Image 1 (cartoon, rainbow, N blue to C red):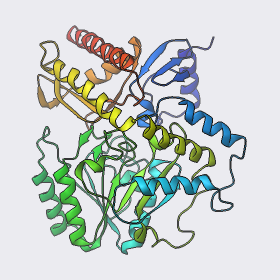
Image 2 (image 1 turned 90 degrees about the horizontal axis):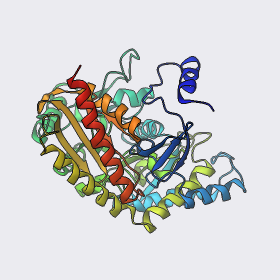
Image 3 (image 1 turned 180 degrees about the vertical axis):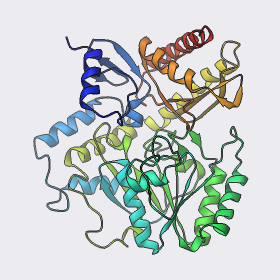
Image 4 (image 1 turned 90 degrees about the vertical axis):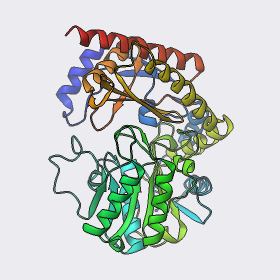
Amino acid sequence: MTTNSELTQRRIDAIPTGLSRHLDVFISRAENAELWDVEGNRYIDFASGIAVTNTGHRHPRVLAAVRAQLDSFTHTSFQTTPYASYVEVCERLNALVPGDFAKKTYLVSTGAEAVENAVKIARAATGRPAFVAFAGAFHGRTLMATTLTGKTTPYKYGFGPLVPDVFHVPFPSAYHGVSVEQSLAALDFLFRTSVHPERVAGIIVEPVQGEGGFNPAPPEFLQALRKVCDTHGILLIADEIQTGFGRTGRMFAIEHAGIAADLVTLAKGLGGGFPIAGVTGRADVMEKVPPGGVGGTFAGSPLSCAAALAVLDVIEEEGLVARAADIGSRIRTVLDGWQGSNAFAACIGDIRNLGSMAALELVHDRDGERPWPELTRLLTRKAAANGLVLLTCGVHGNVIRLLPPLTIPDAILDEGIAIMERSLHEALQELSVQ
């Protein structure tokens, strides 16, 4: 039998360290919200492949759609010899993405590629060069996406020079002492001191910051950004790559603010495990790009389009948007109880969620100024040893993010939360005796 340790050593020998290692566990099988490694160990999945398998691993509808497509063809390149499923995905997205205006969609393969293309589209539509993003943001690892990202290590340091004409302002976070008013004042100050708003093509924002710590943008903040963009002719770009497709209890997170963006970047949950991404935007904006200005050999793969159409059906027919809200409520109730308990009160600085994007921020002695990344990392290792996959995030690496599949049964959800509780006890005990 091949073991996890043997495969880990082979990975070390074959793959550079720049591709980070979270757990030295190699998966051989998956089903809905459960994983099994090469040694037969079972894990409950609270990561969902970083918010990709919202519809669970190997959903029967998704598998059936992809198998049927395999029997027809696997690749032609859409811009060479097109196929109907690409058009159908775009039509569905045009109808689903918020906005009472005509929309068009272009498909790509990854979230970072969607961000890069949104930037190109915004520049073509406005004739302007500059962009505003936010501290703590994550938009991908390609050059422009890296520049837009608001975290230096490991994403920016050593990779410069980056793209010019990109500016960052603080993202509002009540827990970290940044109010909506302060963030908007910083944006106004930026316009007065560093870049005139008439040079800005777009403001890109995650309705819930992902890598930055699962920080939800207050609705009034997104509404204010909409007004700023309208005032200055700037395009509002919503990065819904991690928040999209039901994850937050709405189909798209920006719906919580009751506004629409001019461009929306999409990926992750759309394909149910198959690589597909896209940009959906105002038709008049999308049409500013000349023929050939966007494209890609594998963009909108027939297999991924088949998967995406099945995913959208499953989300609707199984009520997964409402299920996301229910999962988030169940998680939040338990975490609030932990924060009020004697065992965990001192190490839980903040709990936040929007639907089933939930976060637990770990600190020393209730002090938000003293993040505890060591506890966070140890918790993920203890959880894995006990059969639960967790992810971390946050500028200080001290946030646990919870992303269970939206199809997870209540019994397995509760089992996973119980494992996390036991693992946190074990991690605190180990650190207290060191």
